[in-house]
Length: 144
Image (cartoon, rainbow, N blue to C red; front, side):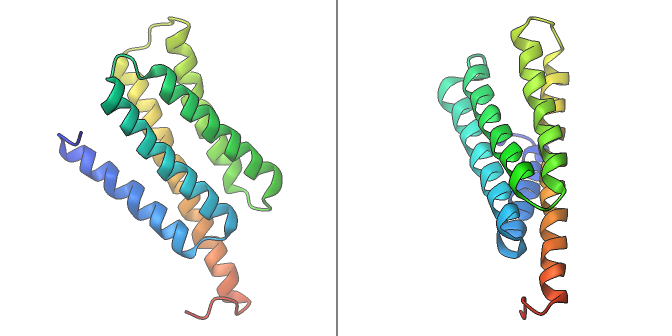
């Protein structure tokens, strides 16, 4: 599952950003971080249970659900980070569609796009959580 140092770096980034958003973010950030962490875990589980060759459909469905959550957050949240997260998630979904349509992107390009989109989403969620935390501190709601 984790064979390279880059795997541990990705694990650290996902967990630290997700835990920060869950601890300090508002409700939209907690929903976004929870969704990303669950989707990340389910994607790894799908790859380990089904194998890398057959994981396109389960991971594609997971990515579509995540896109739906982010679109709902864009619609309901007053913050702007869900727009960025939705755009990056749409990029990941489009990468799946390219593979399904046999446009033949290299597998390294596919994984690079999907992984970099996930890092960008976590960055957007982290920035959103930090700004929500600072807003609460400014009005005196967060006294920690």
